Image 1 (cartoon, rainbow, N blue to C red):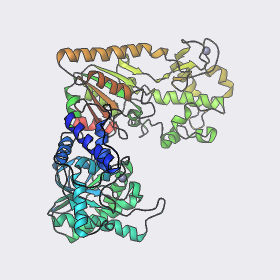
Image 2: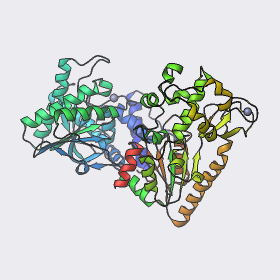
Image 3: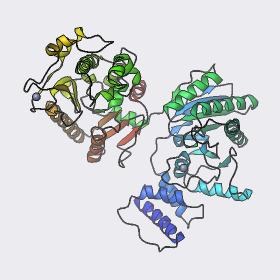
Image 4: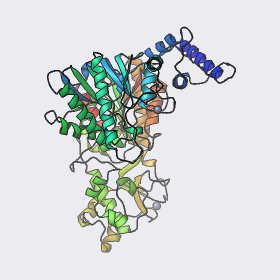
Length: 573
Ligand SMILES: [Zn+2]
Ligand SMILES: [Zn+2]
């Protein structure tokens, strides 16, 4: 994007807004972040004509921005009959391009959302498409002599700068929270889909992408909404012979679950219809081209490590906890693994039953497909790994312990809880191995008569010990200093070599969330800011693929997908 045209356009819109409020025009402060301000000013702006050249300038800015577009042709279609099909697509609606209509879940005022802080799809679509779309909506309303339309009445406009055929704006029913939909509201949602398909077919369109209309802020339960969406599509197919692709655009896990079971019910012969999750081409390219690999892994990587139990090592899972430690819910009121960190244990013998048993389970988790796939993706390139996971799954999976930095600690070590000195830590394994034969997995506790024999104390002060993991300010970091130095040296060497040889380094960041963003996410972003161009960041995160700061699109990409799905997909490319 040309910075000058952005500055000019924002200055014009800013002054326009000031004058509208009866204030004097003034020069924008130099340090203001103009790109978000452009969205904000356009969001708040009534659909009035622009000064000459300004609309063109804004559209040029929008066109110059890089998005990971997905061609409609790349979205697999599942045929209902010779000319009609459905697809399930998980991702960003506005990224789909080519000859299709996008459905905008609008409100009945039909001019888009005027609340800049809303992350609603109505806002996203208007801001990506540009102000021309709002102007067209306003012109249609004016033509009809109305300032509002009913629920389920679609308006068709052009698509602004988006590379699609057009946009169908339609308001689905809005429910009161926590109230099941009435039969009228169900009918209204049905009409929303049916009327949109009618308008699309009448305009000659042969493909329509629908978001999950009325879910989210309009509070329609997703299960109900998915069933109505699929039923309406099926009924439309049976009554119309026009060729039509219906793409259902999903956003959340709940959407996926609800649509999968709705497809199974409505189109049993097609089920299961796989959900298409597009991978950005540059993510694949960077991973393929890099000469060295930096892996930054968070909890999501362990969540995807589905082991012998058929479950991942998910610290938030009640199912896993129930399977591993069934007695702890009654004994200690615990339901998930993360609650055990910092827990005030009522019974010391139960606590040690858990510690031994958990160390044993985690340290014998074994190699799982997600780690094997990561190994294949890295291939024989040099790598270095930093992870917030204390579970040793990298080392268990055969990664070189000399290049694994577990900065949040390690379940294979115990430490003094005081701690009485920087050296008050020791290997857990001998203690765990000795205790395990004396434990009953269904009723975890250390037999009282063996307490002094089996439970370790600090070898220096005789005090209480616990896992050497970052659970409080007692955490001893010293055991990780060498690993940290090696990690820093690896990263420094990778970057230097890449600079010298004209190559690149890729950071593959997987499943690092916001529990401790400073541990994994921020270091990834810092490396890109320091060595942009040479260091490429691929952030793989099903919940938060975004960046905390603007990063150059030629050096950073966020992919909204789980680590397991991502690595599998990379290997199949
Ligand atoms: Zn909104
Ligand atoms: Zn001690």
